[in-house]
Amino acid sequence: MHRATKIVATIGPASSSLEILSKMIAAGLDVVRLNFSHGTADDHRQRAKFVREAARQIGREVAIMADLQGPKIRIGKFKNGSAILTRGAAFILDATCRLGDKNRVGLDYKDLPHDLNAGDILLLNDGLIVLSVRRVIGKEIYTNVEVGGELSNNKGINRQGGGLSAPALTEKDREDISIAMALGADFIAVSFPKNATDMEMARQLADAAGAPFGYKPKMIAKIERAEAIPLLQEILNASDGIMVARGDLAVEVGNAAVPALQKRMIRMAREANKTVITATQMMESMIQNPVPTRAEVSDVANAVLDGTDAVMLSAETASGRYPISTIETMAVICLEAEKSGRVELDKYFLDHTFTHIEQSIAMGALFTAFHLGARAIVALTESGTTALWMSRHWLHIPVYALTPCLASERMMALYRNVVPLHLESIRDRDTALREALKVLVKNNYAVIGDVVVLTMGEPMGQTGSTNTLKIVKVSECA
Image 1 (cartoon, rainbow, N blue to C red):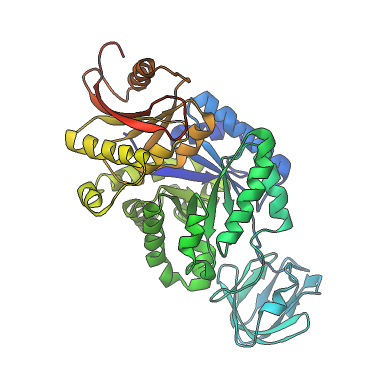
Image 2: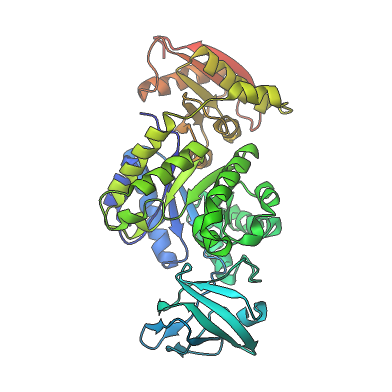
C-alpha cells in the first residue's frame, strides 16, 4: 500500500552496515539522519557512502539529513564516571573544574555563569536532575539539588524557560557543514536556532560549502528553545522546514506544553508550505523491546493525523536492537492512521486566493483528481516545487513526482504523499507524457484504463514553469 507519511531514521552503530541499511530502505526508510553530535567525519563519510550504495541496490533514492550538534551545553566529566546527587545537598557547577565528584563538576560551556541568576532552575540529563541556583560567584554556580539521582559524564544542561545566550552555530557546526556538503547531504538540520538570522547564516554557510559540489541543501530548523516559539513564523520563513524536537523543547517549556505546541507547529508549517518532522522518543521502547507500547503507537498516529510530513527515529535505529522491525512497525502505524485522514479541499479553495500560476495548477490538480476519483496525480517537475504545494493537502490519492534532477528526487523523499521517481530529461511534451505513464505502469502504480491527472510546464526543462494540467487515461502505448 502507498504510505504518505515519511520515515526519518538515525544511523549509528546498530545500522551502519550496507546490509542493514539496505534492509532499512526496503522496510520503508525515506530519509537517513546523520547525527553530528556523535561520530567522526570519517564515520559520516562511510555511512553516507553506504546509504547511497544501499539505495542504488534497492532501486529507490533516499535523502541524507545532516543534523548539527549545535550549542549543546553539557557538564564535564567525573573522576569515577558519575556521582550520586542527594536531594537537598549543595552542588557546584564550576567552569574551571577538570574532573568532578559528588560536590562539583566542570562545564563545557564556560560562559554559563554569565547567563544565570539566583533563583534560576537548571535541568540536567533531560530533566531527570533538577538544580536551583543559589548564587553565582565568578566561574562557579552554587546550587541546591531539588531532584537528585545519578549524574554521569557530559549530560546536557537546560535552563527552565530558556534564555541561554550560546550561539546557534558553533565552530564545530561550521566545520561539520563543510563535511556534510562534501558527502552530499540533501538537508541540514540546525540545532537550537533562536531566530531567522540563525537560519539565514546557516544557509549561507551551507550554500558556500556546497557550491564546489553543485549542492544547495534544504534547511531544517530544529525547534527546541523556548525563545524560538514566539518567533516561529520568522524562523519558518527563513527555513525550508522545521523539526518538532520534543526533547530539549520539553525540558525548557515543560512536558505538558509540548503536545499543543506540536499541533501548532505542524499546522503552521503546512500553511507556510514548509515541511515538518516530528521527532524524539516516538518508539523509544523499541530500543530494547521488539514491540512498541500502545502509548507510542498513539503518539506516532496522532502526529500522522495532525499532518506531519515525517516521523523520526533516533536511538531506536542508531543503537537499538531492532532497527529494521522498528521501521516496519512505524510504517504500519502510519498506514493505519492515514486511512482515517479527512479531506477538506473544497473549504481550502473557498478561503484562499492563488497568486502563482504554478500553485494554481497544483491546486487545480488536487481538486480535479479528488472529484474525478483519479488513480494518481503525476507531476513532471524540475525543482519539486509543484509537488511540495500538492503535498500540503491530504488526499487519498498519491502524487508521483517525476524529475530528471537527482537532487530534487532525493529532496522530495521528505514530502508527505509524494513518491519521487526518475525521468530522463525530455524536452518534447508528448514524449515526456508517454514516458511518464510508462514509468507508472512499470512500477505498478497504474494500469491500462486508469485515469491520472498530470501537470507539466511548457516550455519543458525550465524550473518554475508548471502551467499545464492534463487529464489522461493510461493506454496500451504506455
